[in-house]
Image (spheres, helix red, strand yellow):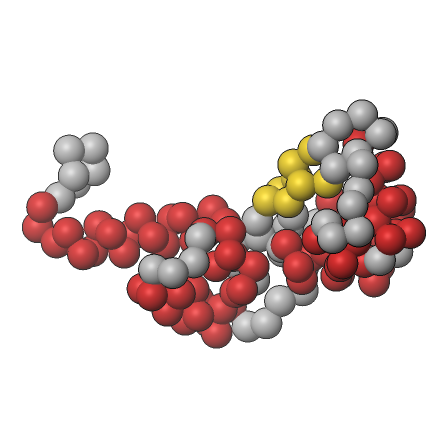
Length: 133
């Protein structure tokens, strides 16, 4: 478990390695909410089951309030394949940065940086007032 990012390692210690990998697969690279009071239709319950979701909710919220976490990427496919898919999804313009991150195994920040670079390339010679030359 020590090769996992800290948050996934924490999830694995609380709820098991399988739960940590499922959470990473479902929300890795993006943000996710963990409420203090779960509902059966919440993504976490659907992802890991009721009992495990309750353990994670209790651990992260202490029963007080909903929290937002940045879920790190778990073990993912090849980076080149993920980048190609990310570019395709950005070009299609149909998905949010969080959705693209989840679909590709890339982080949300990586998606946002790539979108910005693609926008700069598209603008060509227009340049930017703030870009260093």
